[in-house]
Image (tube, rainbow, N blue to C red):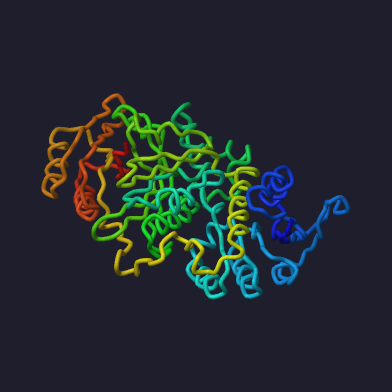
Length: 436
């Protein structure tokens, strides 16, 4: 049986998981792809503390030498980061290597240039593991739903944020307390910014939007909002209104363009996504032939992510002898829209319903003033709750749930409301999506 020589850059959690899966499932993998996959070299920054004499591959600290080694056929980039990883992938492609990566930030921000280079070289750059770990959502969008026009992708695609909101919902805990536990459990980094501020999810939804709609990667136009301002009170009121709060990545296709956004979102409690808790991920896709389909599973971790990397590796090996023109295009579209043909819309053009939370002076006429402003801007109200039981120092929380409205009109109304002399504290708004 023919052998394919694999070089792995990165020997952390995912790198070790890939080598474990390749060894554990070697016979099954050979039956699937018709080749013996042999990891010949692994690079990491330091091998200190590791007994390299027991490892069945060459151990090196020179990642660039591995990426350019003529004896290696396929390079797995599993080290993360951006600049160094970009240089390594470019070097591997320049030296005739197919590449598999799990690097979401790199694909979201530099994927256009890297895919162009891989096409020029007649090589594959595969990236299934960059989004949602063990959920094969890229294959679902690119292959399984290729007979559909996709109108919406909605995903819980960051396990840390989902764990935090789940704990706050189920146990009434506050954000800071749950974040500290998430860090202790290893779900959150010491610096949790990418998770709780939505940047990690924004990388992923940027990628999914390009595959769903056949548009260029445009991370810089993705709207991002974190979960740090969500409180137990917001969660309780949402529940009273029949909603759960989830940190969603959304890609929505409209006639005039595409919305790509990440933010805390009220979704109906009966929606399938509302039952996704803990560190699990899920992505719901709406196609015009299939309708809604939900894809659920572990979004990170050693073996789930390794599973996605190895699946990409098998796909690359299966297509080794194909011309570039015969291979599946990176987004599944042979023709991709230009940026001005189906543009990514600015947040002012978003259309959504809203949860609006105000702290107001408890006196007559306040509700009338606020509803008048909303009506003047064409904003209809679904429901209103005044939390009199939470009255404090003559101030009371007032909550509105609105119908769908363009964001620029909603923002204009909020600017007027903020000038009312009855207002106390900051205005809070969360978007509402009536996901099925």
